[in-house]
Length: 339
Image (tube, rainbow, N blue to C red; front, side, top):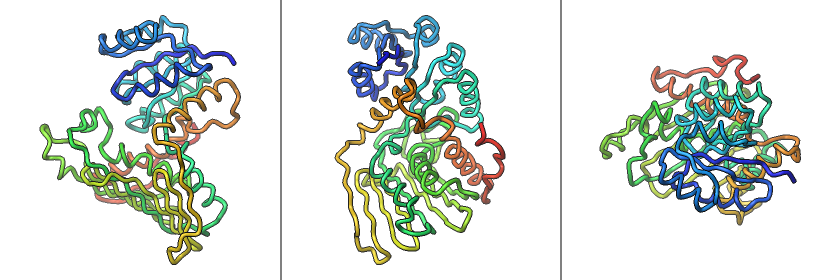
């Protein structure tokens, strides 16, 4: 198997699992690491015996790379993705796909022009319990879906940094905890037609400085055929939990991070599956998939950036709805999904 000469940019507190995985696999050859923090870049470069950069542009231009792994928030990615396109590199980026539909579309169009793979990290797409739920719904095991309830709860003890800035983050808890919930709903039953949202940053005023993005959001989605979904997420409640419940005319499917349950209409459990994989395994499974796709071992890539346009569109319309206090329609985006 040919090794992919790979550069890693972004050495935050969460980088270690990615570094360990990429350097332990035969199909990746990490040749350079980069971070705006020169000390951090040098430290990791010495550990790996590779070149370290604090000028991220030089890493991309000087190293003869095949692939670029971006472990950075979207606001820091513009120059890197532009140069990756110019140099014909495959890109793996942590989610979400972008802060806005316009930003994401620009990057996707550029990557399409140079015919390179652009994947966005989406751990739940590689979580077997969510995969089992999607297959069950598509196979009609619980009949026609008429209601979905999705919840994401977390209590953050400290100011979430750039996520509290609407310009840098693009949004708050809806962009953070809400994004994977919306992604799973769309994967299961398709894109919604209408979006209505309320959100608030009432509780996060305890932080100094206060968050400018929302800490709590409630989103209602309407689908062709009559199904409705409610997405509730907050950074201000314990215990931490993510859950999606699909209600069908012939049964119920309930999914949490590691548990799948199929129930009858009375709530009696008919089938239960528990995954032994840990949450930190899913991004690593996706990196393996990223390599396999580049080398032609997989015919249908999972989690291409274009696959995330629907989710970011829903979030963008949700923020518009919160401002206008009226429902917004997905048809506003026209031919966007044909990119």
